[in-house]
Image 1 (cartoon, rainbow, N blue to C red):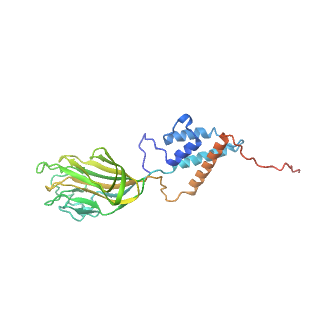
Image 2 (cartoon, rainbow, N blue to C red):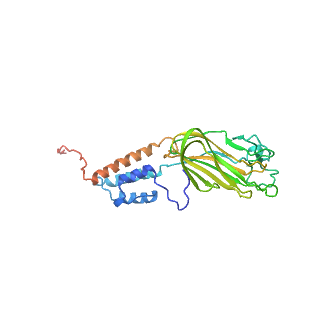
Image 3 (cartoon, helix red, strand yellow):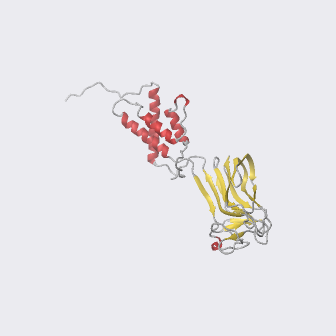
Length: 312
């Protein structure tokens, strides 16, 4: 699970929302919107519930509280970084013009320069990075060699850092950055959104085999993060790319290229639920059902007795 920033309130998972509805905290249409509020209302309610009369009520209340806390601690949607490349391992981080040996990308349309230790012709960055318009060639497109699978409901994100060509003294032309996805089959993408250096734009929904997004980058633009995201309507596979139409041997720079997926359904990080988690959930839902039955006035069956007394 991702870390929660200070002051941020975690959202309720689907399982906890169902649990809240069963316990019926929201009287008079009141909604329980966050996990902390839910837990507080749960604890207060537990000590008012009377499922069975007698001394055993405290035991069942404790079991129900444990089951609820188990539900609250179950992980929800999780983000996974499927691919990340900062180019620092390329050519031992040493500058190389017209570099054609990228480990994780296929290069098409032109050439790219690897910028690192040594001469970068005035460009600066963190570690090694890529000039998308190679020396003596037109601009290049870098496409991931690896394909990435996604499922319906997954949120797919392409992220990278980009800057202008940084070399006004010799070439002051502005350049474009192009980025997007190539899908293995016709794919319906929902809430296709551009962010960061692309500007905040929701393109909407469409069925596509590829996407391409352009933005003009000033020559002196500082390093900025760019993002492209979409919600998958179905399962599929994709590759991601970034490139430029620059053709003056001084192109925009890119670094820290990353593809990540946030799962659309709650995930169990261990792969298999812990037996204690299942036990607490089963007990918890059973007791919620009992509490509901009690509130509606249905009697609970009592243990039958024979009426016989044993004498000693």
